[in-house]
Image (cartoon, rainbow, N blue to C red; front, top):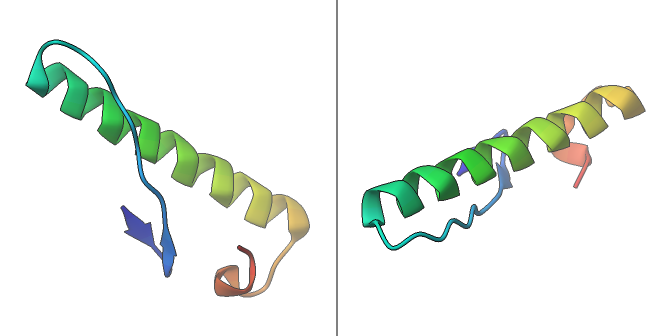
Length: 51
């Protein structure tokens, strides 16, 4: 996944490929949400500067 030039990868495991894919997608979304929270906490004017 990519947002504002920041790329994250999600991981998910299951014996069902659809469930594993969904888990990986949600993991990626959680990582992006955490990144956005860090950016907001630091008060960055330009999110591309925060890595």
